[in-house]
Length: 100
Image (cartoon, rainbow, N blue to C red; front, side):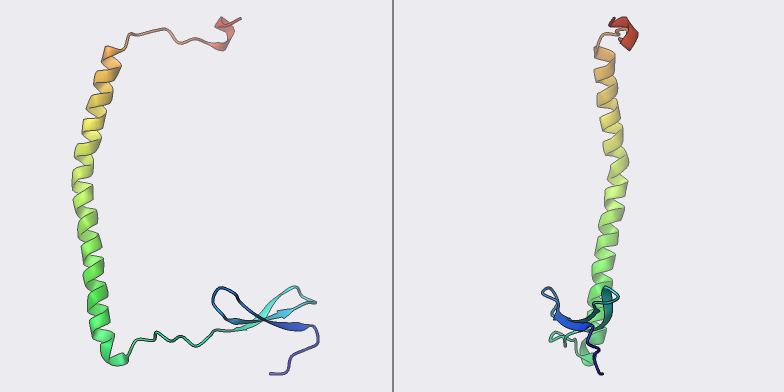
């Protein structure tokens, strides 16, 4: 593709993609992604999908277990806060106009 005089070709330092920037517009008008070297083979697709499904299931099970114990932890924290509130003396709160 022919480039205009106002277009610059820049290589991204992070992903090594080629960006085409139009200086008149002040924005990216095109890009080409670099060739990735870690492309999975089609023959491994089923194994990759099974591994991802197992990983998702493990994360889900961990989430379920944490939600089961979350209620217990919250109720323990509530009981501790209630005990602390009962042990503290009741005082009248100070208001701004009481300080004058």
